[in-house]
Image (cartoon, rainbow, N blue to C red):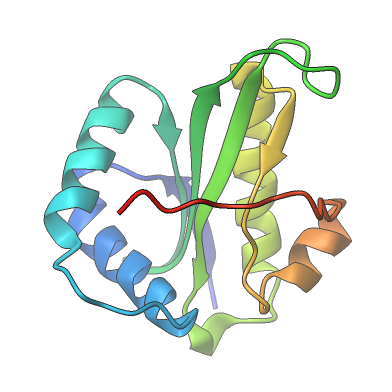
Length: 151
């Protein structure tokens, strides 16, 4: 196994989006729409303006792991005085490559991107499978997270 890492490029988007959808299915999402056009639009816009970055893990030419970090800004608060937040997403490793440190290395790389962007915090809604990785990395639970769906 010869794993290398590089940033996501526009010509990787079809594979990246397929892996994102696989991840969402694994997490138990209900598919009631075709998400591909929305994902393609999001990644094109936010890669273009620098508010989304992703690192990939490859075995040869095959993408076997993904990560994503979206940069958002909200009103400053005591825990994040500049208001810049990294939203972690798209953490996925091909099942044949799990438990080899790939997810940890991808996480390290995108967290560093958030640090370089000037984020004061990184947030994630973790799947049950991911909680162990994030806790070991140093993420803390925040029991106050709630969501209200507008649709």
